[in-house]
Image 1 (cartoon, rainbow, N blue to C red):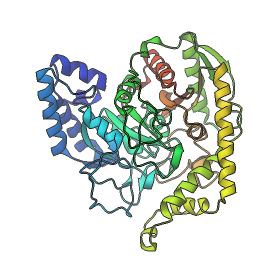
Image 2: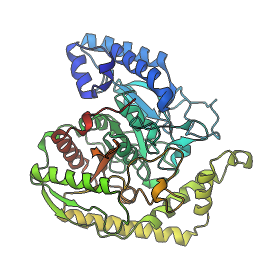
Image 3: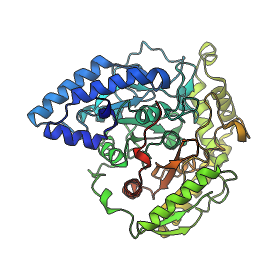
Amino acid sequence: MSDLVWLPATTLVSHYRVKTLSPVEVTRAVLERIAAVNPKVNAYDLVDETSALASARESEARWQRGAPIGPLDGVPTSIKDIVLTRGWPTLRGSKTVDPAGPWNDDAPATARLREAGAVLIGKTTTPEFGWKGVTDSPLTGTTRNPWNLAMTPGGSSGGASAQVAAGMGQLAIGTDGGGSIRIPCAFAGIPGLKPSFGRVPAWPLSPFGTVAHLGPMARTVADCALMLNVLARPDPRDWFSLPYDGTDWTKDLPLGVKGLRIAFSPRLGYVKYVHPEVEARVADAVKVFEKLGARIGAADPGFPDAESVFTAHWTSGAWNLLRRLPPEKLALVEPGLRAAAEHGGRYSLADYLDAVAARGAMGERMKRFHTDWDLLVTPAVAVPAFEVGRLEPRSHAERENWTWWTPFSFPFNLTQQPAMSVPCGFTSDGLPIGLQIVGPMHRDDLVLRAGHAYEQATDHHKRRPIV
């Protein structure tokens, strides 16, 4: 039973089809794993065993009849506790949210997963309103990294990354407003995709605006592609969503990277610090792409440090999120988030519009860049996972924020391009390292192809954490 929790979703579905495994036995194994591991890791803040087993029994009956309702039928899946889920509180890591609800709605991602037959296990932890790159909150406490319980699993989708990495479910839905899928995937050693903006419909729209994406986190790149097939289905509630074209994101995975033009930018042209072991493992990963037939060249995107542009967008969203809270509720909000909101409230309309214009220039620059290059690869995060209870690594602390150690992620929230983190090795003390693959807008297929090709050529994704 314990081995079942490590099987990818694609493998589970293959077994269900020929009746060599049952969704019920897989779900029981996952629930047993959660009972054993979650008290140490704190990846889930809600687990609904009764609902999960009922869904698994319904799935089992469908597979027995040879009539699955979707490509994820019977696959254990979690929902980040920022994404609405009918019947379960969505508390967003905050004491300001009333658990009583009502909770009558599924977000588009949740609805699509239900419709595809996924077994929803529970909600995964998040920092308050997803505001930072680590996962702890006043409501749910500290979430820990399964590779080393003294370390953070990243954030803000750290509960999701810890859940998948620790074998507590095959799939997870995450959100990414500045790196919140890619940071925790890098820290926890799993693949995860921030799709092109609008690829996965969202409702309600994020308070952080058009930098925020939803996407899949999973055990393999193929699982991410399979999950994207479901998440990308249409929902009329998101007026930003892309037209649905029925793309099967798994179809082109075997095409690999032969002949693709891949630019390698180890520091984006301006990043001051990258951990030496991160830099070395990412450089090694680029050599793998070269062996697989890609045409590699050194090239920086050509835009300046985007921190000020991102901060203007993101902290303005934080200010708008908190400005209507009454004083008694505002006092419950984590001080760091309050400080970010106060910073955002100091921007004038002219300041904000200047940031919007600078963002547009970045997007234009990347459009031009991708006329020469099919893909861009960088480190996913500048550092490996660090100690829990901190916003930044102790040994290289510079500022009281998280953007200096995540310089590779948030620029591509501004440009809205698809970007993925895949495991590319480990530090000398056993912590995972992530490689970021960035594609042109709407070319999620190229990003998935490259991630899958790299994964198939290496074995980093096959290692298991200590818990």
